[in-house]
Image (cartoon, rainbow, N blue to C red; front, side, top):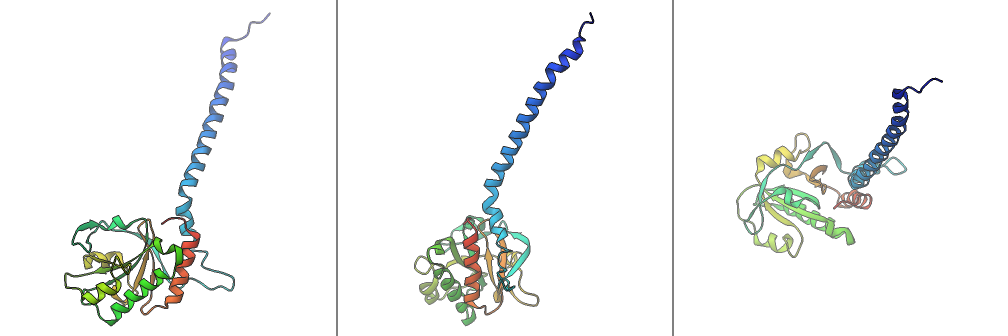
Length: 218
């Protein structure tokens, strides 16, 4: 009677064990992918909103999408108490940004009014938005502007920033200046949208409402 080959017998015992290990490995990988997908879903949702701006009828979003993404630079800024803080300390909120020198003219004041009102118009979602005036020099600020727009009463943050760094991060329209443009930064710190000079506040507000509706970040 032929004796079984010991090597074959050993292989027969090992094969099922290897199959069980492979199956556990596959299940573990699938579970890990599902976990990563759940964790990343708020981020994915925020960028899917780029494409849900096209309702029936073919209308598109009002603001111009900034592509490729421009992450927040490693920039130090000065807050209202003359403290130096990193710009990325403002991550976690949607930032509506206007940039001007401290000698804020009528057009500058109009932009401050616009971003303040757009935030106020978002209802219960307004706490997810921070309007920001990036001030590009060390000049004095008219106290009337502070009383009308600055925190803690009116919601606009007055922050001092280096203009050169701002220009590298904030792309103006071709032939324009950053002072002519309003910008939107997502809670991850990515510059995602810019709005034209003298923008339509209703259309800006509509864009923002859609983003806040479809995104759970910020």
